[in-house]
Image 1 (cartoon, helix red, strand yellow):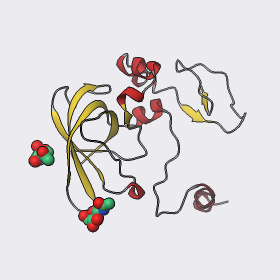
Image 2: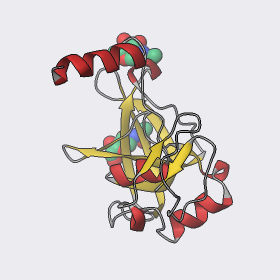
Image 3: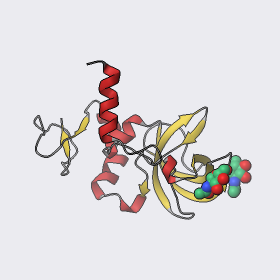
Length: 167
Ligand SMILES: *[C@@H]1O[C@H](CO)[C@@H](O)[C@H](O)[C@H]1NC(C)=O
Ligand SMILES: *[C@@H]1O[C@H](CO)[C@@H](O)[C@H](O)[C@H]1NC(C)=O
């Protein structure tokens, strides 16, 4: 079967209609490994930017991945203004783990990344972020498994959760 037909079938069966945002569920480690930045940040303000885009100004408190953005700097993070377009809603004054990509020099994020109120992270997740356990283990891919179809012995440092296999 041709690859494009196969892809079509995969998407036809598994992805919701294009009017809503669809993301495959990812583990926090996978999200951070795929991202350009992962920070702890407090939301200062939100304003309309270009069409369909919100600009969140945030104070960076910690950086868990790279040197940029630097802690205590204020940066703008852009997301679409609609959750159906995968826009993320942040509350002003709240502190989050914010994960995303840098596109044309702009920090961007969307619902497919692991954005979460920072205090809702588990103790292990905070520990793993601060000790760089996730970013230092990006070679260890974490696959979603369905039912009992986990295929291999666990050798990752991250403790198992119900729906994930650890290789
Ligand atoms: C999103 O932005 C568009 C264009 O800037 C605007 O027409 C629309 O009302 C906005 N939607 C929301 C939910 O704010
Ligand atoms: C957000 O930061 C940008 C860049 O510093 C600034 O131009 C903009 O006025 C700020 N927005 C708010 C609402 O403070």
